[in-house]
Amino acid sequence: MNAPEVVIELQDVVKIYRLGREVTIPALQGVNLRIRRGEMVAIMGPSGSGKSTLMNIMGALDQPTSGAYYLEGQNVARLGDRELARIRNQHIGFVFQSFNLLPRLTALEQVELPLIYAGGHSRRERRRQAEHALAMVGLADRLHHRPNELSGGQQQRVAIARALVNRPSIILADEPTGNLDSRSGAEVMHIFQRLNRDHGITVVIVTHEPEIALHTRRIVRLQDGRIISDEPVPEPKIADPSRALYTR
Image (cartoon, rainbow, N blue to C red):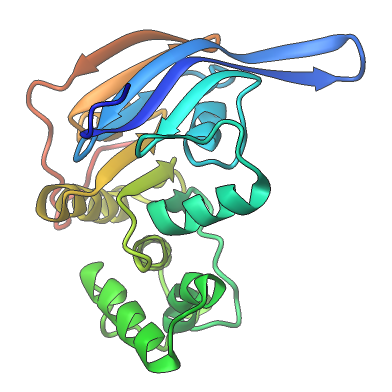
């Protein structure tokens, strides 16, 4: 059913939220989408278009009301909470607009957390993998800094390192530059492009910023819970961390 290179496939996915007995809100209405291994895709749409709901379903954080969702060839739409947690831990790295860092933990300790939750890692191995992930995002010299000692861009890079530490095949990023200035946003997009290009990680970014989307290879647009366009980016922009990404 699924070619090996297809890592995300949604088939006629519907998501309806119920408010009480009679009020329903259709968030997704028959979405069909395929994302292949190694793609870098932007999901765009106005507020209320369903893009965050789509991201939650792709990340196994929510389940569709109907339809099928295949992740790495497995239909996860009806799995239980324990299996969904395992899939999230082993296959997906999450990056959010709010960095979700714990204020009392150092960068190294933040990045170690997914390894602690996964279990099966010695303290030495956790530290080695966390140091490696932080080095990948350019923070090898910030291992022992806490969030209040880091800039916004550095905090988001810690969050990216935390998403990377379990070596996921997919990174899902929800408005990852939304709380950053333009130069910090360029640093973050540069990291995503490098992870996609050099390490083959599939990257899906939800954004409302057209300039951010143009740094990906493909743009999927949603409106009223439906995909209204799905087009490649002919010449993706290359993020330069030494320059501003765009002018607000």
